Length: 100
Image 1: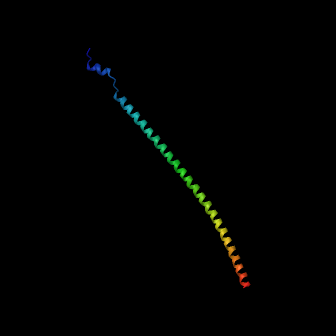
Image 2: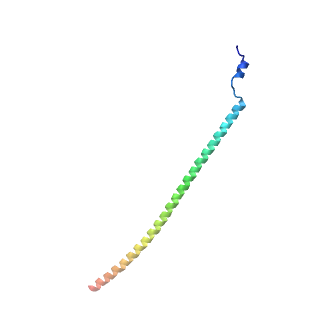
Image 3: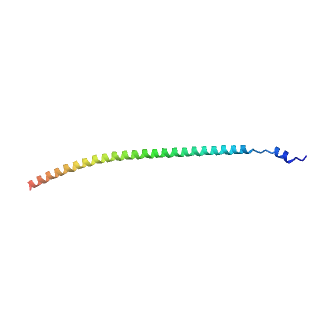
């Protein structure tokens, strides 16, 4: 009932080298595809974040331009009011000088 070395080798489960190379090659290919997909997803997230940030900056610039325009209008109104007050003050001064 003793088995010879040839019989023992034939009965054990072994994988041939070409099959091992095929499995390793497919594993490497799957890993490369996974890395490529992960890189694509990361780059896509970066682009979205950049676009969102660019849109936020655009909105901020628009708000600044509106604020600057509003401030300029307010300054012009205040300047007109001050000019009117000066003219009224000079008129009142002239009236007071004539009264004295």
